[in-house]
Length: 50
Image (cartoon, rainbow, N blue to C red; front, side):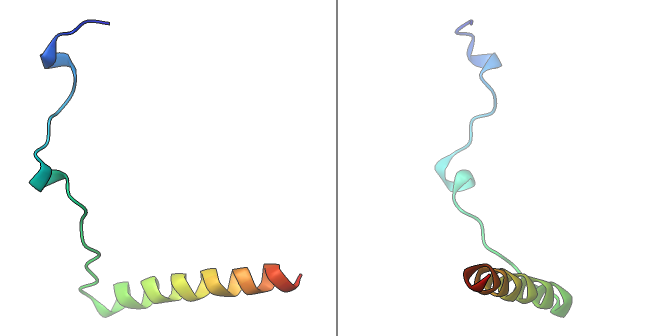
C-alpha cells in the first residue's frame, strides 16, 4: 500500500459531506414514500402476530 495522496480517493469538505434532505417534490413521490412507511409498519404487525 502506498502513501501517495493522489490515490487515496476524493476529499470532501464538511459542508459537502453533511446529511442530505429527503425532498418529496411530487405527489407521486410522497405517496410512494408514505406507502413504504405504512408497508413496513404492517409487515411488523403481521410478523408480530404470526
